[in-house]
Image (cartoon, rainbow, N blue to C red; front, side, top):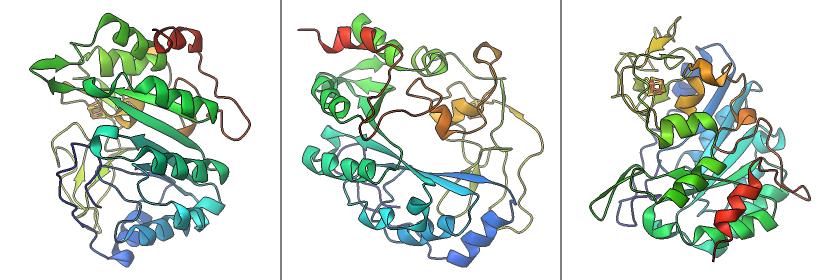
Length: 303
Ligand code: SF4
């Protein structure tokens, strides 16, 4: 993993891959189940060990992988992998203009992914100083039939707390582009505390050194007290009750039970969360369907 994605350009690149291909392979094989990997919290494409990881996942036909990436590096080698040939890899390309991303490079690389017939989305953080530019970026993605999603920013900017400080119009746009569960927990920040959740049973957070956490929003090792390299490591048999007040991760929300939103999805990618739809559409010649496109465009096309 190398860290050079968001949070500005002054973060050092760290290489945290330990090179233990056999140990990683055996650790996940011991779980003895279908696995949907999400490579995130640092840039993996082009990092040392990344092709080893792609190869490990590619060698297991019931394993799939979604890569959260800034697409700074060419996806060429990924697209030549078994994982890509089998269409078991998905790309969530996150564009951060203020994080040092180059628009031309991003466009070139995301088109390579789209043209290889790999499911792809483009994500954008509504960090206050980069909200206004979104209209132009969205236009390009839309013209190229690439689905987009927008994430609210949680934190401070110029002494103001977000997402609370978003204008009424921006909040409405977020409501129009996001899925209802994201609005409730991600934008309105309803507390998930006490809700049943499949974290630790069907979803775990595995760090570069094998330590296992419940999810991205709960302090590490809260429930999974062991390391995935430990041969006795086991997933929990039962759901947990959420111990924290903010469920910000979209994958987390996909595993948290709230009857208001119906059954939990059986397949993560195909219930693509941020983007309102059960099945990804768009790509190639196919136009992206946004259920609330008309409302979205009202804000996008404001003068
Ligand atoms: S995924 Fe969300 S609901 Fe589940 S434990 Fe983590 S924060 Fe709580």
